[in-house]
Amino acid sequence: MTIPSDADYVPVPVPRKLRVAPPPRTMDALRAERAAAVAALRAGDEAAVARQRGLGKLTARERLGLLLDEGSFTELEPHRAHRASGLGMARRRPPTDGVVTGSGTVHGRRVFVYAQDFTVFGGSLGEAHAAKIHKVMDLALACGAPLVGLNDSGGARIQEGVMSLDGYGGIFRRHVKASGVIPQISVILGPCAGGAAYSPALTDFTFMVRGTARMYLTGPDVVEAVTGERVTHEELGGADVHGGRSGVAAFVYDDEETCLAEVRYLLSLLPSNNLDEPPAAGPCGAADDERPALAELVPVEPNRPYDMRAVAAELLDDGEAMEAHEGWAGNVLCLLGRIDGETVGVVANQPMVLAGVLNAEAAQKAARFVRFCDAFGIPLVTLVDVPGFLPGTDQEHAGAIRHGAKLLYAYCEATVPRVQVIIRKAYGGAYIVMDSRSIGCDVSLAWPTNEIAVMGAEAAVDVVHRADLAAAPDRAARRAELAARYRAELVHPYYAAERGLVDEVIDPVDTRAAVARALAMLRAKREAPQPRKHGNTPL
Image 1 (cartoon, rainbow, N blue to C red):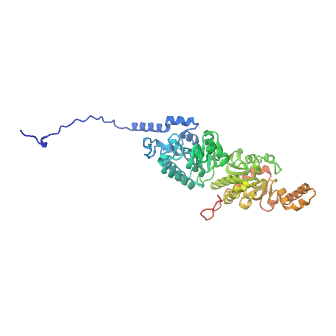
Image 2: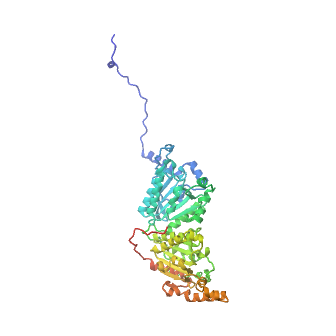
């Protein structure tokens, strides 16, 4: 018997399971697949969206719909997702990575936007999230268009470690690079905690919504653990805290709809970049516009208060103004509006609050506003009724000298058209700081009620005639007599005009017309910058 060798075996083929070939792919099928993906992306997670609405907040896309002109939004990188794999991140990679970025128009003018989406990872910032924001910031700067950030984020994404921190650093650097080149606006519509809070602080204006917006470096839990102090989110970093105490928020509103409508209005007043002119609404005859109400609004007596907002409303077109930091440092007003169709910035003392004195907070508030207007070519109108700087150890210890120097520096550095209107008091160093002729204002106007002096008459008499008053049998009568002489000799309405420190003493009813003519005269003003890297602002 012959035993067969391996070479004699013939392999028997094993039948394979029949495979059904997939149907051929068609363009219609691919389009339908894409449409379904886009619809799912825009709808978001149903449960997460419900939670967002339960907090009284809109979704990121709803917010963009309110901010931008209808149908104008072009989204960038909607399918981008994170690349992290640790701590369970590989199991979930939703599109957008928690931020919607792109560009649209506001009143037909180009803007770039990003809107953090709290329904995806709590809007936390990771590598991909940051990269999307970096891209839209770079495009805004390259195109010379405003940047608006809608903030609603839990902060850095812990699962991505140091890459989250690196992402924030890239945002901060780009804010600084764009500062003074394009307008940058931050809108806080939810949490903005930790390092994320520095992003709004670096932009030009910050908007907040009461009840939902909160911003702080360390949250209530950390505060309690470190200091033992118990504080709520709202008490620590709510909208009213930053709008009325810290000065971080320039504008505070009750709901998102109003807030975003006001962002649109602010953008309508601003140029797209530092090389463009602010948008004009067209002349409206302001150069011949008399305002009889101005002769009635301001009391002749220097110590009687009045509302400077009413005076500003008479100067501005349609009485419309957007007031920055309305709830903070109320003794000075910072308003954006128009005169004869052209955007102007108004800085004004407010006699209704602390008699209109300057203090540390008021100087900070006005200085930042002056620098913003100067950066974007917005002329400045300064309404002066200031009795001086607020005295006291609290102010001295709070750095009133340093903060006052900020406002002085801002005005001295400003090259835009500058018109000063002295309404009543203008005493001491505060007169100098409020855009006096000596620090470079182009046109100085004054009402017949102006009192420009080192100090008020009574205070001056107490210093100069101390011995005379001490020897007087009727001190009060002698003091009144000397004060009247001081006013007649040194503080009469034409004293400063005779010395070239005031261009004209005007009838109050002609103030709007006089300011409009001065601004028209200065419209072509150009001043070359000094050849230096930068000045050393007294920060």
